[in-house]
Figure 1 (cartoon, helix red, strand yellow):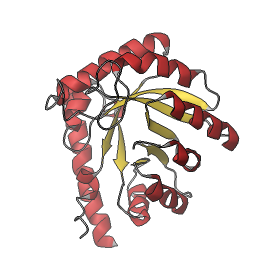
Figure 2 (tube, rainbow, N blue to C red):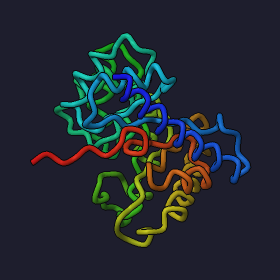
Figure 3 (tube, rainbow, N blue to C red):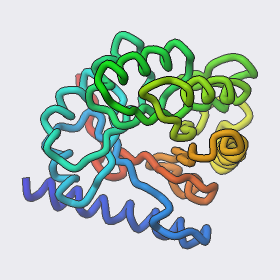
Figure 4 (spheres, rainbow, N blue to C red):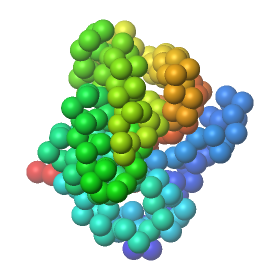
Amino acid sequence: MTDRKDELAANLAKVERRIADACAAAGRRRDEVTLIVVTKTYPATDVRILSELGVRHVAENRDQDAAPKAAACMDLPLTWHFVGQLQTNKVRSVVGYADFVQSVDRSKLVTALSKEAVRAGRELGCLIQVALDAGESARGERGGVAPAGIEELADLVARSPGLRLGGLMTVAPLTGEYAGREQAAFGRLMDLSTDLRRSHPTATMVSAGMSADLEQAVAAGATHVRVGSAVLGVRPRLG
């Protein structure tokens, strides 16, 4: 366990330095960017180590992994983010532990989240996932709503009981005009965030950037970066 803690501490320090350097290059303060460590496929013991090392935000993308992990770590001072595509049959479970759902991309999901948040007596932060590889009305390959659908969905979240509109999230697209152009993609997300804040001033979160492209996200103005492998390492595939 000591070896694993040393490994995670070293990786975390490298990521912190990358974020700090990116902030300095962009003329931003380090405290303007929140690191979310994506712990998917890694055990609750790693989450405990990360908490000991000062991590306060963790993320998961599969409920079947996240629910038992969150339960095992419920004594820790952590904010849990759900970042994966979410089916409505998993909503009740996710609402039980998540503080934020960053992958809100359709009205049916908003309705289900609101119902379960009210039932659980919780307020759930919601980010609209934006698909920059989508057409004007289509969804993206990895979920998300097209830019033209943000306003309608954001308005629905804002007026739904038990939900709080937090802002926007995106994943750098693999296809379309922004493929391979992470800086441009994240810049587009910032423009969309500016538009959203005209009608929803408190929706200030902009979640963008992962292990490979966090610098571009920070340069564009992201408030949250989601980093997994750069902190936890790359697990060998099973089989």
